[in-house]
Length: 345
Ligand code: PMV
Image (cartoon, rainbow, N blue to C red; front, side):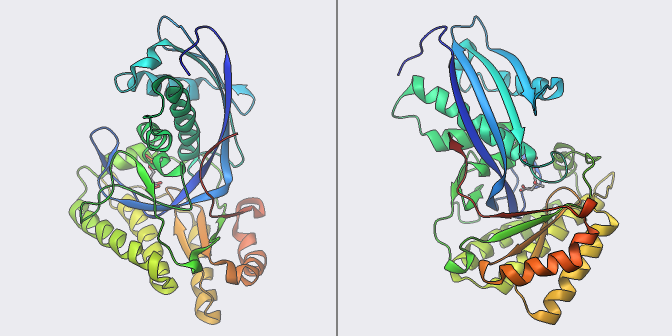
């Protein structure tokens, strides 16, 4: 299909958030990661976005930007800047007129990657719009991941699922431009669960972009890169073999390393809260006592993600109710599980 001037079109996209098992922390150039990462795409935590667009504008025009039913000037400015920043890669956008409406199923800026799902949705939507003009050769998913990456690095991993890799690894596999699905994984990881224990819902004080920048001159930069590359290689192998204990060890080391890097940046900062640590202690104690395979990971925020296989869902969820719920903000947590990625509705 070719561009038809001045005809309004509407597409709706649902894009999930994702939780990194091996974290992307530090970037270079045009939103390229300093190290390869692996994540699990979520299912329930998602952004629902409607793009209402037409061609024939004299210059790229972002009209209304509505977030959760209200005009959102900050979101509008970020998107406007982002759209203009990718015109050199997708010159057709210079004739696009666009209105955006978006809402999340979860609280934003609380350590659940809302920028991953928001930019995942925008990326898939724009990729779909561009495919109308570019035709068959334009790879919808690759370009969606690339566009999403340019908005927010981790968003590159929200297009597909359940396990996704992004970045060139130690043997030269993978791409820094876009993320790809990890297709070879053991059945113990089928329908892996993620319970997000919401510790604090306030907007975090230091953004992820600021955190990435602090990696440039970090004393531990080289050590971190060696660690992340090793974890990446090991986790790819563990996903194949299904060794849950080794899997959990990488998850937890990655989570604590990410926060350790924040605490040792210049300037240092702390995103964890007392209840984040109280929850971690409870998890370690429960695992020690019951030998249940349940592990934690943490994003750039205070919330704790509890990762566990389907086989122990019942035990873990009764442990959450009896021991962890009271440590969550207003007793709130979100039960989520591995999903298949962003979709055009
Ligand atoms: O996508 P960004 O640029 O907001 O970076 C997020 C990085 C982490 O969420 C902390 C880790 C990751 O790999 O998702």
